[in-house]
Image (cartoon, rainbow over all chains, first blue to last red; front, side, top):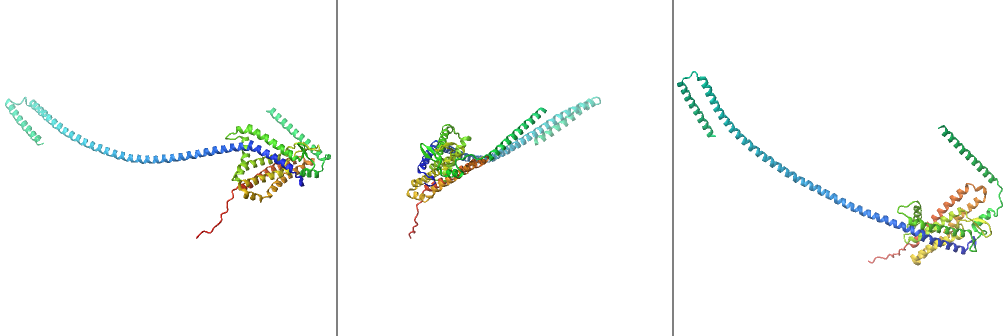
Length: 173
Length: 284
């Protein structure tokens, strides 16, 4: 044969390669390939899980954001209501306080008027006694018994006139 | 401090002396070898090169049968590869981890490369062709690098010679080409029936081109190596470039070429053929 081609040797080479190919495939290629495929599947599974988890997280985030928005709206509404209630209560308190204050002032004014009158009455009695005492002291040496009785009479008359005048005023009020 | 300086100086002097001494010896040896009268050769360079191509004289015994040295190399490569595969299967694969180490990465890369190539070029039934191109690739790569080992083997004429790369034997290259074509043809017949087989048969030049491409590439490496080693004066430094680098490049390129071609042709052969749709005129 040209180029030293030998069919028997070609077949021997083929046999050699078939043995090698079979051995390498079963001993090395298939186990390693199986391992690679398993790992690829594991990664694919993990990726799938992660994607699913990410989707769930996204869903939860959206839900939470929605809830936050809802709660913000609710808080704003409740705030409005509370502010209104507070305004009503404070207005009522102010009104009541004003009413109480005006009642207290009125009562105080009345009491002050009564006290003023009482003080004036007692002052007038005291002044009258003082005047009598002072007059007695001034006139004890110079006034005669006749003169003395005339003065008493005059004083009584004046005192009665003053008292009746005050009663008239008080009755008018 | 002074002592340390003196010691360092002494050391550097020693190193300089050693370097100069070794360089001098090497230079003298190179000179001697270049001027050495050529010894008695059994064959002329012409005969060596011719025998490298045709293997007419240097035969080896294979179970009593006179065969080319390439066949012995081929079986030796197979034994080495199968032992290595068994060792990897027993000791390495059961310890494979999800996060691979260095060795695991190399094995995964090797298998993954051929598997991915098969999946990329053949969308139908890529597992079989993946296993085939993996085996063929590993065989071509290892057998090409095998010649670097220079394992000596006795010829039938009683001369010792280094075992060549198996695929530098034309019979091995033809076997590889024919097997690859048979695989493609068989896959075409199984998947596409008679039509599929016809589709593959039209590429009848494929086994010839595959065989002679492999043979030519490997043979050129062999011839260059033979040429270089024939002359003693060329045996320094040059074999490192010619032998190792050329062989390595050959190994990688031929592995890649054969694996790619087989996977592409296989992919074409097993691809489901779409039925021709006759354009009928629409009825009015």
